[in-house]
Length: 206
Image 1 (cartoon, helix red, strand yellow):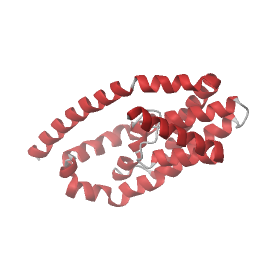
Image 2: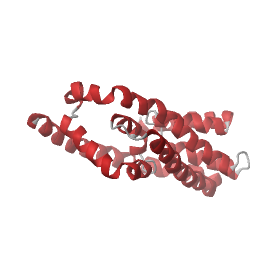
Image 3: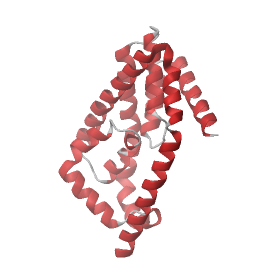
Image 4: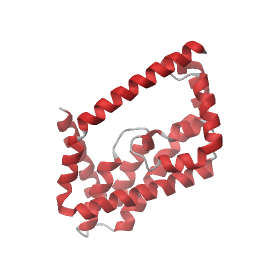
């Protein structure tokens, strides 16, 4: 079942990019940055495949990916900026987020925030959700969106380059993804269990 879902998702991604070109890349990357888990690992390598066929420019594909990330980060950031902290302080315990968590995050961002947001844009999974906590923690807008663009640009260039090199053998990348499906699911369950245990403990203490 998971294989069929992934195949359908990848097929849809490919059809959007084929029909819309760089604008399609920007659209899909914007969706990913709106806290929707649409994998850039599927979007950008296919763009690179089209680059290898001469149907799209390398720089155009990469820059479109970075622009899309910035566009998608805007609503997520402002959702957190204008209402996030208040919401989580009131209802956070129902989703296992305590006031202590928010306070610790404030200190962490105060000390490492700018570099953290830059690095997170080059990390799988985390990059999808980083804008919301950035807004909640009142990260400086100009700095956050600049680092979002730069980190996303590096990420985009890397994955587009992967697609270029794979060329006609892009199906090999899909096969690799499928091999790691079970590993990813197990890892998520383990990390999720640790997260729940830790945060229930924090909530009881607060």
